[in-house]
Amino acid sequence: MRVLIVEDERDLATAIATGLKRQGFAVDLAFDGEQGLSLASSGAYDGIILDRMLPRMDGLAVCRALRQAGANVGILMLTAKDTVDDRVEGLNGGADDYLVKPFEFKELLARTHALTRRHTSEKRNVLTAKDLRVDLETAEVTRAGQPLALSRKEYMLLVYLLRHPRQLITHERLCTHAWDLESDANADLVRAHIKNLRRKVDTGFDEKLIHTVHGMGYRLEP
Image 1 (cartoon, helix red, strand yellow):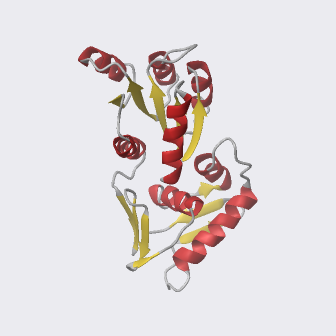
Image 2 (tube, rainbow, N blue to C red; image 1 turned 120 degrees about the vertical axis):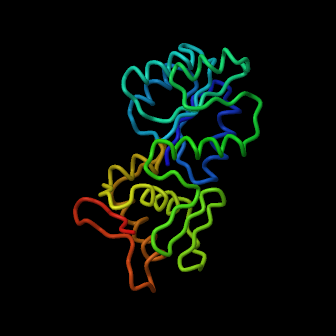
């Protein structure tokens, strides 16, 4: 899952990004409202963590602009303002959730997971397909009760496939949602990671879960 952090406190933004990457997210950063709105308008993100007070364009204006443009992405608003009126204004402006600074990273992580679930068909903390199981809170992956050792990128791809079961997922879609702006992701790179992922998930099992749709992409059949 790919997340955009719009936060002008660079140390805080970097710390959040580092923590989310360790949990299997692809993360991009913006340090002012105009840059954040420009990136967010691409539609490439599964969730946006948006500071309320930003230079050039404040977070509430960014949020309202995205909603007016029809963006359905989940938005978690961060703020030092903690009055009821401030929270109501942020939620009425289009935010899905509101987190007051300072905060614990584990709470932000839980809210980010909830945020990305809210805008997909899959609402649980544990994703399953037959005897394959992924715990989003612990990042543990098992099949038939046996642990699978996945790389961070393999884990991200598997979670995305599990959250969109039976759908055709193109190479372009996987590039968009599993890699950040600093990467040089392409179809060949996706194929290589999926090959390794399929080897770990399907080898030794009669029932295969990850299927190639030749020339187009992949489908997970649970």
